[in-house]
Length: 132
Picture (cartoon, helix red, strand yellow):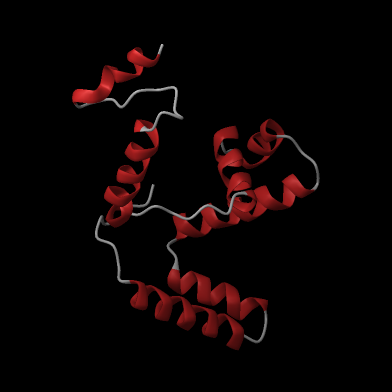
């Protein structure tokens, strides 16, 4: 497993990094140059993980089930499902910076009378019983 620091990068740095990486790939003239570029950017473990994820996509398009793909590539069916969902769902990734905002929105939605479930903490957590 790859260790990743908990500090997030600024959006402008992320965008410029992606643009530079895509520019390098576009400038590659053949498949061998792209492979050499990937070997510069990724460790051998990261390359193997990336190749397995590409193979998951390829095998799933051929109609194989999660278990068959997992057996062929030596990955768990959970990993296969994770990769497949990554290409189906278009949800925005929630970062730590946005968690306070998202949790505040969820609390207001849960606290409304349209919800069947009470809030989990605070004074008003049992008020839903009055409406029964």
